[in-house]
Amino acid sequence: MDSGSTGRGGLLLPILLLACVAGVLQIVSATTDPRDAAALRSLMGNWKNTPPSWGSSDPCGTAWEGVLCSSDSRVIRLSLSSMGLKGTLSGGIGQLSELQSLILAGCSFSGSIPTELGNLPQLSFLALNSNNFTGNVPASFGQLSNLYWLDVADNQLTGRIPVSSGSTPGLDWLVKTKHFHFNKNQLSGPIPENLFNSQMTLIHILFDGNQLTGTIPDSIGFVTSLKVLRLDKNSLSGTVPTNLNNLTNLNELNLANNQLTGGLPDLTGMNALNYVDLSNNSFTPSEAPAWLSKLPSITTLVIQSGGLRGAVPSALFSSPQLQEVILSDNHFNGTLSLGTSVSPQLQLVDFRNNNISLYAVLPQYRNTLLLAGNPVCNTGGLNGTAYCQLPRSQQPYSTSLAHCGSKSSYSCPAEQALSPRSCDCALPYSGELIFRAPFFRDLTNVTRFQTLERSLWTGLQLAPGSVSLQGPHFDSDNYLRVQLRLFPAAGAYFNRSEIGRLGFELSNHTYKAPQEWGPYQFIALPYNFQK
Image 1 (cartoon, helix red, strand yellow):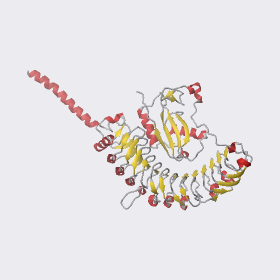
Image 2 (cartoon, rainbow, N blue to C red; image 1 turned 120 degrees about the horizontal axis):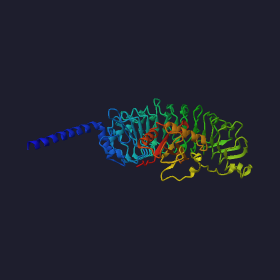
Image 3 (cartoon, one colour; image 1 turned 180 degrees about the vertical axis):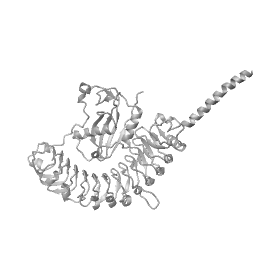
Image 4 (cartoon, rainbow, N blue to C red; image 1 turned 60 degrees about the horizontal axis):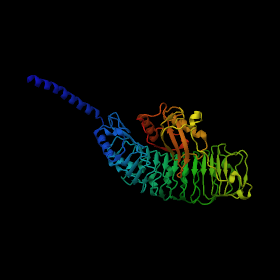
């Protein structure tokens, strides 16, 4: 009997020791700061389609997908773009007090943006674009003193642009922010005069595609760091501020499709301008201003329905970088002469629907010239020529597979495609690159797309030749959309960590596209990992 008791006691001790060890291991593995773990569980309760790894109780210790932790087990990054998440973003997000980067682009979030986001003092990157958020832009954003990137584009946000009042924060407090991306929402009211100031370091202001009214504030001329300004597709009125030409670093200016009045803005001295669009406003009819021919960096000039009249200055076509001139639906008359020093890069000249009666043929210009709707097409001897026809659509660029020979017509299994690197079938990481303000409109330049391909595989640390681009086109918002496929260097599949890295580098803009492509966003398709 004693021996039996001793035997049971002998068994009990190892069991107790194992239980203690297991308990210690559980404590050791539960590395996530309890406040952050609780906040993530709170967020998860409002979300559907969370990644499979989110089933554990320890986001840092077991590496929840899309969650990055610091060495002291604080959550510093949530990168969950294009993962198919649905639900609402609760105020619990404000409990992640060390969060530096929040990327929820291209999901299906709805409801309002929580004001508690303003409680994140370390936040430097905020991307909530391409969701279904409603309600106002939180004034609490103004408290994010370290914010570099602010993107809430392509949602259903309404109300006015928040600015500070006394101790109440507003967007005018964001003097370190480089990117204001508010495009494609339903924001209304005027752009506040005190939204901008000389302390700001903004490089991109995108307010296009909203319902903004009132005048363009003079204060925008104080933000001399600006490179891209898009205010098009609103209902802005009044005259363009005379100090706009203080923006000597500006590469793109788009004020099209508003109700602006007065004379065309004077862009003299804006020598960095690559792209200008002033179309479809109510400017006072005038002859072509002198600055049209004096922008040394201009690549694309667009002023449709701009009230321009009189003779076309031949010097207009000599700027060395010029690629496209689109001045249709104006009142130019007389003879159109491109002059004797035409830009060697000029691809498109569009003067449709003017009053041009003669064209001085220039043998050295053999690219597209559109004159339909002018008297010269009826009585000027050009009737029936290509100049007077509707422009022909061109085959969009597609990465060549010609080097794959007979394999180029091979049919791959579902969801797979032929890799331009290996000429074998593989499952690419696919999605759409959306360039919101490219400095060009010419899509016939093959070299430009090949340069982007090389930039992508180099910047994303992929094997040469593993990038495919297809179907580039401009949409109704003047955004350039390009289908992107990234292929694995070997084998048919990427692993989960590779997809995580690529998705982050594209959504966090660690990858920088060539400057002429302007700001972009990447919306990925779900990736079906090998089972």
